[in-house]
Length: 408
Image (cartoon, rainbow, N blue to C red):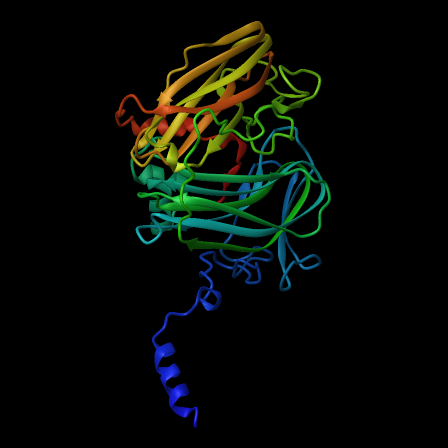
């Protein structure tokens, strides 16, 4: 019997069937010039679509490299030869997002290579509700000019981070390594940044970058009593932590293996001589789990101070599309303090997307602070619904001093 009728019937059935996931087209790359192959017209080495940070120091070098590329003919690099002022130097790209991306995951993939790195290399994915940057992009302005035209001062900037993930790596020499970051894009997010760079000396090369929009993975429900912080005792090199160091001479944040409350290490922060300014230094960690919304959480940590002429304290922040909610700090430490436990609790608002846990002190002032055995845990459901905060408080919660400014 002929198989033709059967084959025709099979063709009719499969013609209307959806394409299987194995054969579906990959998500589109939202980045411009992700392989750095296209030059910026009229520029001798700058790739199109990308920006470099600006530190105002002559020890930082950016370039477009033809000798070591992962794919294609070009990669880009950033090198630094001085740590007199603690700053992060990076390549970045800024993108506008909107309703089509809300409720989905943003995935940043990039290849990195390090040469003689002495410090911390990193890749970073950030999502913001950022009125000023959005206005700057649409009007083709730099951010400072956008602030001026909007009639805003820096202290009134309604910037708030709604998604944040960083991968830090310490290896001095590596071949090409693939990095991947994923964050949830909550409603009202309008600007996304991707960054790759270093804090310290040496060189990092990057190539073949992509940002895709993908179906959101389910949020993981936290268990009661579970420590939501990674590397809470700083035994693993503190790569899970953000280091916040304002760019003043003498600022230091580093793992200390000579002092600890438990285990073999702690984090040490010091800030040199006193100046007529005040900034925050220390470490913080972002908990990017929207399942924390509507929960009551508790932060604890052990602190030790040595001849500290300012105050040390811990903080909790919850970031929402409406702004930032801060829990007041009940304890502060200065002068000489033996290992002492401090704690505070907060109700996470029902629309929070990320929580920031800070362990820090005011700088620059003489003295040394150690932190160890830190923890953030869920206690149960929130006791109160909470109120919308003042949006102008949002600027307090970003370790922006770690990132040198981005060129327009």
